[in-house]
Image 1 (tube, one colour):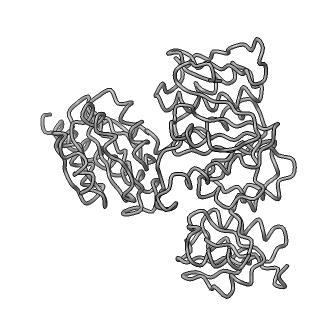
Image 2 (cartoon, rainbow, N blue to C red):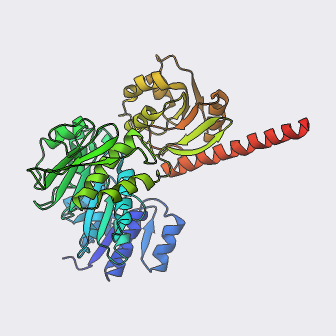
Image 3 (tube, one colour):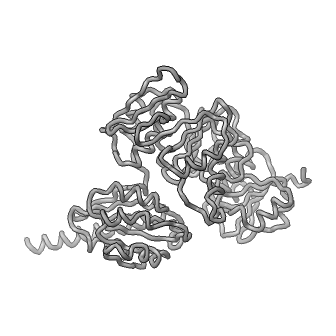
Amino acid sequence: MKKSNLIVVLGAGESGVGAALLAKSKGLNVFVSDASIIKPNFRKELEENNIPFEEGQHTLKLLREAELVIKSPGISPYLPYIQDLLAQGIPTYSEIEFAYQFVTAAKIIAVTGTNGKSTTVSLIYHILKQANWNVQLGGNIGYSFARLLLQKEPQWYVLEVSSYQLEFIQKFRPNIALILNLYPHHLERYNNQLSLYAKAKFNIFKNQVAEDFFIYGCDSPLLVQELAKAKYLSQPLCFGWEPREELNAWFDGNSICFHMKKDKPKGAKTIKIPIDEAQSRSKSFIYNSMAAGLVGNLLDIKKESIRNSFMTFENLEHRLERVCEIEGVEFINDSKATNVNSAWFALEQMNRNVIWVVGGKDTGTSDFGMLFPLVKEKVKALILLGREVERIAEAFSGIGKPMFKVDSMQMAVQKAFSLAERGEVVLLSPACPSFDMFENFEERGNAFKAEVKKLLAEVELKNNLSTKKQE
């Protein structure tokens, strides 16, 4: 035990500040260090709670005096000062690991995967709330896990967890763990090794015991391949499209079918939940509903309650979000599509000609070629925005579709509208992270929506003036 009893939190975003507030509430000696300038709202929280901090630097001498370091997820474990801490033998935890030690009786549902995490955790949360369960939602969505621990403990926590959050796990143990899929993503973080990315994801079940459950998507070949090498003690359940002997959930064209044979190996009954009245019948929604529905069935929530939850669930902001229609042209915001696989799901669901707004800051590892067949079939024109315009233009150079490079979201929206005809769709589904022009996908999606609404106002004003002239 170090004499200082100092806990240092690295990073002053939602995760770091949540951890600092939790540490302070437990009477611990905490200090926050951020290599960047701290945002005003987080700075205010630190000041109001008398939590000392530094910004614009990490003082290595101070870090070496820590009893414990809590690392925010955005900080790579391979940075020199993190490696120095590990070499010094200083315990380094993720925020969710730190928060977990203060959980007393609540149980945890944790969801990870390359795509679909936010929708799935939100749907699980919606199912439990509809059934009048005492539940809180957080993690990589909304409030950090640590911040949730400042409130009265619920019956269940539903947490979205990324590979970054799962990197420094010691004891974190969800009662129900889900890995939805696994595709190459964030590989620059993991020395371009898929196995290291998978290992981080698999930390979600490494502390589970025989009474726990592990749910995974069987239609993700890389996930199935990597799982074959892994060891886990929990009870596995899997879901996929086509009914197969090993599946516990599948889609028959009209209903999601659940067969909980893990609980009742002899004579288990198949439960069918029609989704014809659900708000969305998109492929991604159905797939996420299989995973969420398995959780509902494990918790013995009634079939009608789960079905009602599917029907009343609203799509998340920035995920295939309908913005508005202008002169017969529909605008859809899918800014949360920060990788190629997410964009694939969005394009796959389009049944009209698409003007596709694509681009951002890629790591150089994305395979845009996998989108070639869908782009050829569904896309009328491409609007290229952001740092990767040249690479994306090269990837689709032989497709025979017009491509237009633009420098701003305003230009993207204006150009897309000029190309679109009545009955067509303008789709923002970037297939890239946003960090070249925007702070995050939310800011990018909000910029898109603002420009679309500005365009709507301009078109309405023009039409009103035209009508007055005719009068």
